[in-house]
Image (cartoon, rainbow, N blue to C red; front, side, top):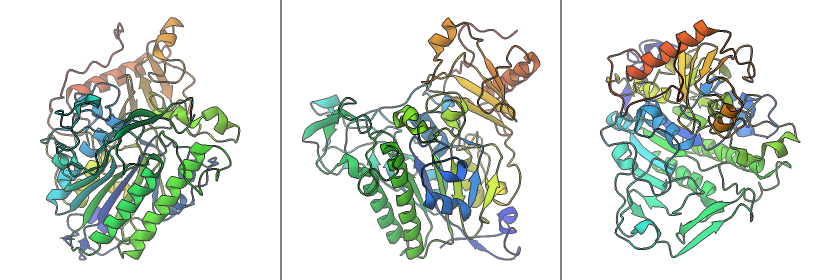
Length: 506
């Protein structure tokens, strides 16, 4: 295994060891749940009614972040930000998400965590839901003219992954086909789908499905693949990076026995319990392979919980997937992008730590850069701050601001406890949606003090004009400079319009 000098990681290494000791570079596993709310796991919600003992154990043995955010409140853009360390809205994707047959979003020359770790000597592997597009061959007939016998181009392999195994979009998006490093593992012979009328929780869009693709077995299958990968890597001398983006608990919500009915609430809660169970299996596999002590594992979600979880039904049991925050997936409100984030690294992170620092999933990039002793380039990790100081007990990692983005392309900017939403309503799926908010004559912007107003109920936009002005100026600076971190200005991939249509600052 490669050795990293303590001189590179002195702030981190000095936490446990003398300055003369050398530290092997850790294996890194990043698990990204899909549509899991901050209120759905016990480490980040004391009122959580879903039992998540394995994630609680992970938190007890590692670190819990209580003010962690995705860069977007929906799937594709968050994944872009996570892998590039760059806010998603700087890319060509201005709003919404890709589909299961979309072409690739991240160009080969864009720096990613995969490239960074590959350069540091890591074996890099993606297993799971990609949802960043790859280029199907379009020379076929039938559904979207895809020829499944031809190689897939511009998949995760151009973004720094030596190998990958997964499906292209969300698990409710066709085509339902496994692709193993550029090749479909089986050719679809039929179409399949389930309507919402047929199954309130387990629905998925109709489309081509391969004979080796079983919807309700996808989640356990991906963990089985991941555990097999760990066993293989345990035989090697170089470290590995496993990126494991899960399809759950996103729709189709399909818990399998013995989890269906286990929560005694609803299938969504059952599915969350299944995710927790598989995380326990993953940790056990690390121990069995002798990899546990020096493996850094992250667990988080790509955005807040979806309304498909059935909030009213869960409320009957006293459970709130958004943990008391306003809104949910797709929204600019906290429930859209504030997510659970746990980190465990027995060799380096003291167990039971809690952090209230503002962090973003874009921070993963600079964390990896610091751990491997690599310096950020100007056009790499532009919106990323290393989490290493927080691992070492610091109160801040240098991040004092956060820019959030909703499904319709609306922005919010936060500094400290002040948050300015550049929308009249949720900018997403919860009420009031933008058309209704405008019809009601609500103010075009919303200003909240999160320390006093966790639920974002008291809009101070008209009462605090100076605060609004300061945040708008800060947003303009971070947008125009192409980065929120110190460094030279760099270009965005497109012209960024962040002000609501028709609004002009006074």
